[in-house]
Image: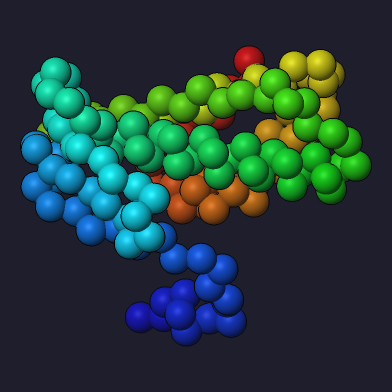
Amino acid sequence: METLANQSTKVVYTGKTHTTGGRENGVAESSDGQLALKLSTPGSGKPGTNPEQLFAAGWSACFEGALGVAANKMKISLPKETAIDAEVDLRSGKDGFSIAARLNISIPGVSREVAQALVDTAHEICPYSKATRGNIDVTINLV
């Protein structure tokens, strides 16, 4: 099986974490000490975040970066008020658990046509979008 390591790609960055306890009463820490989180099951009321929130935060941050790249390609400035509200669902069905996601993107002060072009381009180049494409239900909304 061919992996990315076998292709002609350059690793730009590797995020490393160490997690114990899982989503029940876990802790996740990054190797550089910049991240230290308590983990808890969604809806449990216990302190901590969960994998769905972390995925939503990561994807929305990455997508906003991709919007910036798209704006540069189009030779326009991305408004500072650009925002993404990400929603990641943990679902349960007859085949077990799965996730679905929505990105609700606001690009104020930009025409809807230009904003949609930015979103479409960002969705093509964002690594999280590439990773999820065809694997989970994804909805991208320009709001």
